[in-house]
Amino acid sequence: MADGRIPAERRRRKPTRSGVLLSEDVIVDCALRLVGQHGPDALSVRRLGAALGCDPSALYRYFHNTDDLLLAVADRIIGDAMAGFEPDGMPWRDALREMALRIHRGYREQPRVAALAAYRVTRRAHEFRAVDAGIGLLRRAGFSDADAVRHYSAFVDTVLGHAALDAAHLALPVERREADDRAWTGVYAELSDAGHPHLAAVRGVLPLMGGSSFETALELVLAALVAAAPGG
Image 1 (cartoon, rainbow, N blue to C red):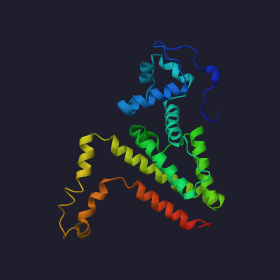
Image 2 (cartoon, helix red, strand yellow):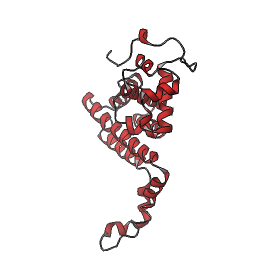
Image 3 (spheres, rainbow, N blue to C red):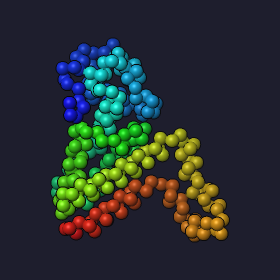
């Protein structure tokens, strides 16, 4: 099938050994939980089968393979993030900002999945609606069809790139994450003025490097879009 879905007639109708009635949503729920607890290696039919109390082969009635499942997991994150998003009546810039914040927050809440899936194209319903909404907002801003598509690609890649970066940071062991954050007040603060004059000049504000730059990058992209929009 074009969207990768398994035909309904191939899906399981009886509960598993543990009493779970399998469905795509149940399997995605389990995959999100396992990856969140154990990391990317947990996304295997063996681990999923054990967690759901079913033979691993039963999962192939719903998903072609683990990559197909990963795309469904990514699409769930998009769907949950965009639930309740109503851009009609909002200024297009404000609607794009809310869309970006929602998607970024959705992936930050699932950091171990974000590292696997933020850069993928899910080819599923939630992504379809999100892309349609984003391009629609840029068309509403007055951009040509081609420019709306190009600018949406740059916008959403900025959002997803930062989502993956921030999620990867969150997924680090605590001691490594804290060591990275301390670098800006530690080794960077100790660099010589002669060897690194510009770092020395901004030494007092270097801790700003320790946080996420997502919102700053988002505002820069939005400002550029407003400046370029035919309607101003």
